[in-house]
Length: 407
Image 1 (cartoon, rainbow, N blue to C red):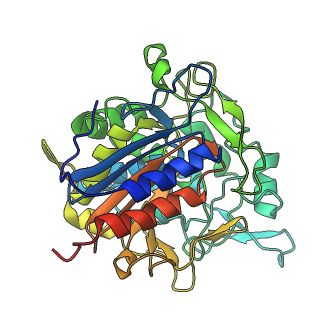
Image 2 (image 1 turned 60 degrees about the vertical axis):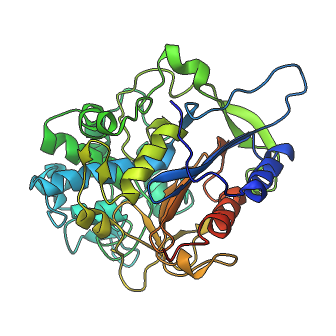
C-alpha cells in the first residue's frame, strides 16, 4: 500500500538530510516519516543506511513496525466510539464493568498498614488520562509501587505468555494504587484495563472489535497484534542502543526478531496499551482520521466533538506529564493524547495545543490544530520514545510545512 503525496513542489530536503544523518551516524537503524497538511500527505521519506555488503534494506510505506504505545491512541478512539453509542460514560466507575476493582487501596507510608482505602473509584476518564493511580511496573523499578507490581509479576516483561486482559485486570485489582484516583498522573496499564472494558461492553474480543469497527473502515490492512508468516519479510528487527542511558549512543544488538520474536505468533494478551504492529501507510490513515475530525473516506468514525474532548486537559491543575526517567515540559494529558501547552525551543507559536503520543521503540504521532499539520516518524530502537530525532523531525516539519498555517 502506497501513500499518495500531494502538493508537490515543497522542499523538504533539509528534513530528509537531518533524518538521514541519524542513520548514517548509526544512531538509528532506519527511519520512515510522513507529513500531513489538512488530510493530504505532502512528504514521505524512508531513510536507510548503506549496507556495504551488497544487500539493500527494503523500507517502504508497507514495512511493519512495532507500534507500542501508539496503540493507546487506537484504544482511546475505540472507547470514545462506545461512548458516542451510549454504551459507556467517561465518569462511570470502573467497577461497573470490572467488579474486581471495588474497594481499592492506595499506598500511604504514614499508615500503619502502608495503605489506605481509596477516596473514590477509578473512572473510565481516569483510565484514558492516566490519572487512575495504576502503574506499569518498569518505569520506576525502585519505587514502592513498582516493587509491588514486580513482586506480583505484573510487568509487561513478566506476564505469562498465555495471560489475557481479564487475567491482567484481576491481578491489577489486587495491588494498591500509587495515588488516589484523579489526584496525580502516572503512565500505566490503564489503557489495557480500558481494552478489557471494551471487551465487556461490546461482548467481543478486543482484536475483533478493533478489526470490525476501526481497522477495516480505515483500510489499516496490516495493523494487528501479530505478524503472520506471509508478512514477516516486511517486518524489521528491533534494536537496542549500545548504551541505553544516552540517546547519543550507536545502535546495538537486535532485541526482537521478526521471525522468532514477541510478535511472530498470535497472543492471548491483546494489549490496548502497546500490543499493535502497524505500517507507515496504516498509521497515516489513523492520522488522517484524527486531522479530519473523525471523518474517513467511507463516512464518519467519530464525532468532531469527541476528538476535541480527547484534546482537552484531564489532569489536576498542578499535575503534568512526567516520570523519574523523562519529563515533557509544559505538557498535560487528555484522553489518549499528551497536550503541549506552549512551544518547545525551536518551534513556532503554532505548536501550542499540539497533541501527540509515541511508542518506546521510536514511533511518534502528532497533530498541530493551529498549523493544520501532523506527522509520523517511525524507527525501531529501544529506548526510542524521547530520542532527539523525533523532536528534530517535528521542528523541521513546522518550519517547512506550516509556512501558510493561517490559511
